Image 1 (cartoon, rainbow over the protein chains, first blue to last red):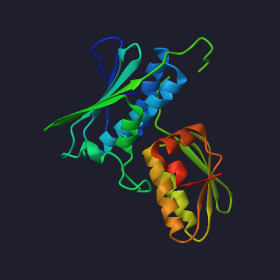
Image 2: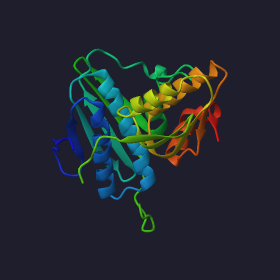
Image 3: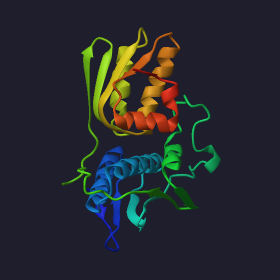
Image 4: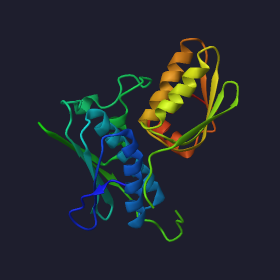
Length: 146
Length: 102
């Protein structure tokens, strides 16, 4: 589990080492938070993918630790924010999120986030890049056993 | 329960068939690449993904790279019994129309 740096109750805020092993741990932390807050399984699966892609991007971009925050935006949306200090400016232009060729080997991560999220915001500062993806979610129903 | 790093297991039920189970992300995709590469490009490869509970773009990269490599040698990578997680990501990315799935 990552270091808990939560500044307020309700949101999940954690810092992780920049390593591929952190991705599964962070995804698990996020899913536990989502389950505890009664989000539906389908919403948790979508968010797992968004988290995984954003964290893979962060790990590739820098050896520095990264911060992840999961928080309810409103009753129907959850925001995933990942911030890190990139080794160099590595964020492609928004128009270039996604491979030129559908069968290209690389370049799908941010395009997947873009496809799943209702909005994606990038704040690129000289020493810190913050990406926030807001995903539409549903709460778990009584009959939903997940 | 404490969260854990991703885990992937890969078995080879027959000579040119691999069966993956677990998570395929950037922590584990290298295992899949290694196993696929070991089979070489001398014939079709069947990759059973029925027990893959999670996959992201790192897993797709392994699949697409092998698909392209085998296609270049007139062979196929056949994805078999894909799980819901795999099917969803293939559809999101449009790859379901380009890969061999049965």
